[in-house]
Length: 223
Length: 404
Image (cartoon, rainbow over all chains, first blue to last red; front, side):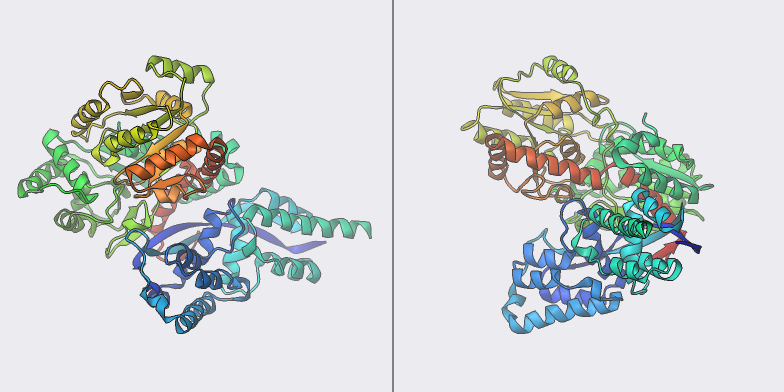
């Protein structure tokens, strides 16, 4: 399984920027959600994962967390956290889904608008600025690809699984795209694409990816 | 002094590789860091570790310190307190004193960097020397509820900078320049945080006359009203009704903090003749001793009234110690209540947290371990180094997704 289009590994590092926007209740949260840049929606639906990636495999959603822990609207919090982020191929569509979820909840529970958080518990809107850098790693075979996956930083895995797919509107993660188009293994590409990365810790995700690829390599060798 | 590769066993080779990739992109730039003191306090502590690492990465980095007399530092300490939300009378004369010393520094200090990285309000006026270079203002203070007049005063300077940095989201303000969130960090290889042999710990306890016959509850901080050492004594007294323990209040002073002598005197007065309260004035540079005291402690407290970040919390968590801390400033970024520590909002809350830990050692140990994991992932010097390099690069790339 050698190909002429090597997979060049990049990594993505990011800086958090403060927008100065904050919300003390659902109405303000909704207002800002409609206006903040896409990089803010991305931050609050993905950054938690990186900060707490060793902690628990919860889908990262700052909005859900805040609504539950500080506003006390657990049902809405669960709805927000349960949004199937992997189904959305653009930040825009993810934003619309979050807004739709909150607006729907408010229609059914108008009293939720009367709740305010205490000082110090405001929701602060941040945004992510991403810096993409080439690494020294390049794979031409699945074996090389798997070995590099074991060595690269979590930020690099993150870039391919989340950032490229959603922020660049690619709709599919880069690993699957390369495996399908350059290695020619559609089945393996689909298997990786079908993983829900939002319900795993990053190291679990790395381990799973390596296991799937090495499983395929072993299978091919046995043929 | 640790070299970058010394961090590999802690954070892994891939992270070090990424730092080197970033540093490559900053070759040729001169970074000039300016603050008000090179000893004492968290800022100097971080810079003392960070600057050599930046140089080690091949980035031309220099560190300069402004000059100022007692009057100037009394004024800037007052500004510090009121920016934190404290209630002190700020007079026009204070601004005059600030201007006078600032003007002298403007005349005398050479500005030569491509990127000028100014820390806190003391040197803030230097931005009047801005030319083609890029200026960043780094705020280490909790300005979520600042004194209006003083904030309006320094905001005039801030608006001349190209970017600003704050330690926690709640510190963000309405500014026309970009504001970045970069929490500070600890150095796991420094004397303050590296592992210590039991004999070293015992020697320090012996030096300060602290017996290990009962649990030790410790707060390590400058003697500053905002760290509420008097409140910690009250919490200890509430705990003491049920749990026999020792209280250690250990701290030092900083050149730019003229109030510390007064606070220390009040703490000693409140401690009175209680043989189980140990008030220790630790001289600057006693990092091994601080390390030993933290490692010897059963519970570590940070009952601050206000904090910028609260580096002592990260230090304690790195040592997997159970921490009881106020939910102020950057502390909630470090301590997740009941997961990696206990957050308190009062003397009674602090006392409750301490008792819970003393009476449930397994729970205390578990939370301490979670705390260590959290610090490892998010608050080590290498993460901070990365963020600062990204910050410098951001000055030259306005877009949200930057391909380097």
